[in-house]
Figure (cartoon, rainbow, N blue to C red):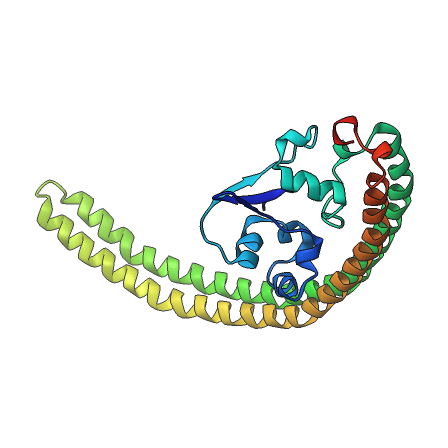
Length: 258
């Protein structure tokens, strides 16, 4: 994943994405294609938005000085154009960061409370579903093992005397090796004749059990994800504006960014 801030240099131009582009009709298409704001500010969405396939990809996470960024991006940061993308600590002065944390920590705690509750709800559904899957899968595996072991024993019954016979007359060498190999291959083919259908049967039962499990598990996961995303959105509604609202006031900025 690309880091914030990412941009592409092509000729004398700098290409990057801000909230303005992401919230535009073209940006809405990007949101469907690239999940999460972290992904939305990467090089692939930048290329997709501006329809460019060349240029030099750049990124920087060191906000200690504006000189680490192109002038256009410095101006965009100062305008608050990246609101909703990230909250780089180095942008704020120490007192302003302390103020932000006073707002952010309870919001995070609330988000965690909702996320944990969603996870518990999901596990309540998922665990019985997994147990049901295991209940079907385990006998299928045991049945396969029973057949496979029997087939292996059958193979060894043929292969071992062939090996012993080969060892006994090994000195004349190549002709005897060929004879031994012929018997061994025949025994192996016999083994595979038994083992392969058993393996296929096991796979069939296991896949059916897995499909049954996924039928229960996937809606549960979707529901959990829905609750988690809602909690995250609620958190970001509080967290992101608080950071950027503080940053808009020059006195709250780190000295280098005033």
